[in-house]
Amino acid sequence: MRRINEVLREVVGAAISGELSDPRIGFVTVTAVETSPDLRTAKVFVSVLGSEEEREATFEGLRSSHGVIQSRIAAETRMKRTPTLTFHYDDTIEKGVRISELLGEGEDEE
Image (cartoon, rainbow, N blue to C red; front, top):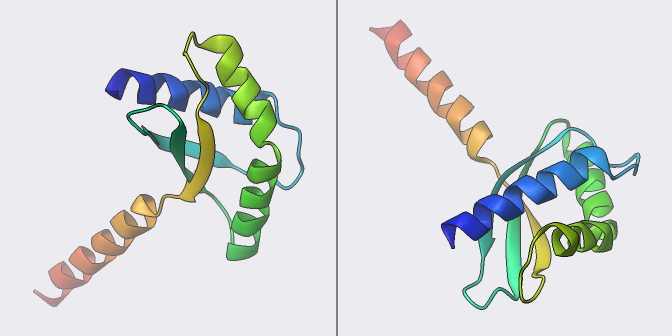
């Protein structure tokens, strides 16, 4: 499953950066993919640079480009079935920055 998730992450990332020309899609990084054991669904976690409005517009663009991305997966992988993709926001980077800020404040107080 780990290998499948990694291949899907690479294919989806390449499709988003190379094939999608939707102006709503901003700077997107595919951080992880979690595929269900039956390969029917895959959660794609993405990090989006920009404001809340830009993030929402990017997700709308990704949802509308779902078919293009799935066809790219079908073309580049030899999977029995192509999983249905759902896009989720990955806030790990924001949490890391927040933790770093809190740790920095703690050092300043000492």
